[in-house]
Amino acid sequence: TRTPGTTPVPVPPALQYVLDADAERRRLGHAPRGAFLSRRSSDPEHQFSGTVELPRQQARVCVTAVFQLQDNIRDKLRPITMTLAYGIRGDGATRQRRDPAQLHRGSVLPPLSPVL
Image (tube, rainbow, N blue to C red):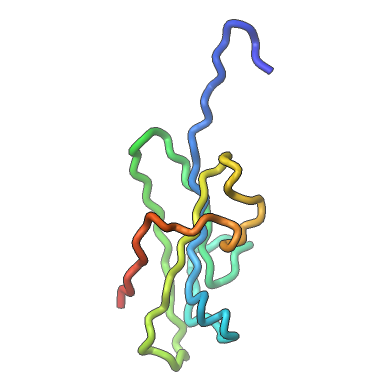
């Protein structure tokens, strides 16, 4: 409810995201070949997730995710693919569970190239 004569304060939109490493390899039953160092304690080692507040239109906001390769990996020739799932908080598109399969796939964003 709102008081007569007041206008509601708009809530800035927020982008929820999940960056997932080596998903196809894990789907085949193999262990991930690395881990995100600064992930949340609730995230598995191969995922990095969070929420970015967008204070205004066309605002640029950066997030840094550090991924460390394991020393003992055997498959060093195939690239480690990164998948980005995202959704706008409050639009009904995202779910309470932080499962990357539940967020919208980024069809507008180009695939990430290997950095090695």
